[in-house]
Image (tube, rainbow, N blue to C red; front, side, top):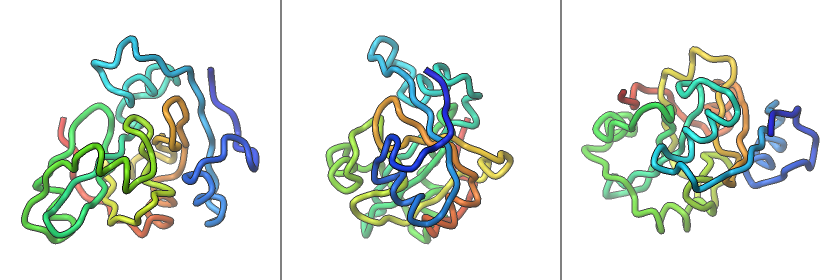
Length: 168
């Protein structure tokens, strides 16, 4: 479908509301989500349909350290290194959170989970590869809806950290 500049109130989700309230500039991108080729994942579908490199489009994953759940944001072209994520938040280990728990705590459905506007605040770690871009794309809070934001602004609004948590 293509990209458009953000207009206040357009495509409003908890993620866009959080950015608006923080005064962070962003763009919204919409595309027609399809279940036809889901073997590659929701993020790869977004990158393909929006014409972005898979290293510039990020997915949001939730992990459990045993004492808390944390969010990792990594390129859709790779995977999250759970040991590296645990180290980044000062934990000994981490395992992927149950998808039902991730949906309940984030307030979003799988394939549309955004690190922004989550129902429960979690420590957030962004893969450091994001810092090479002036804009990264991530879920805007629903399937077929992405947000383009500067990674430094994302870290600021989430009080997150950048660390090498992605693997390829």
